[in-house]
Image (cartoon, rainbow, N blue to C red; front, side, top):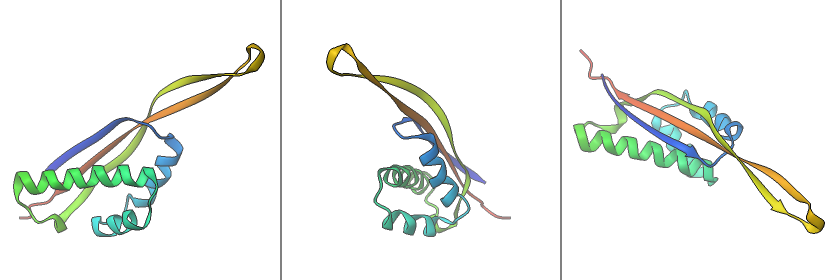
Length: 114
């Protein structure tokens, strides 16, 4: 088994949003996942597509294996930093918002058989 790992740290997206997407695509094969990516144009899907594409290209360039036999080993998301943003308002008041970040981890493997 050959494994290729990739991660995206401090991704500017809510943990809850990206968790739903990952749970949706977790148990599917790569061809179905890329079909899902084609029809969904949201920012989160574009970033996940980029992570998958980079990992598959690493496999092909390093080992020269057929990309049809690659499977997902693990795919998960964790919470990261939360930044507080302050927006000034009139009369000395301000509004607070939170900018949440998350980490996405992906590992693909190619089983050699035997």
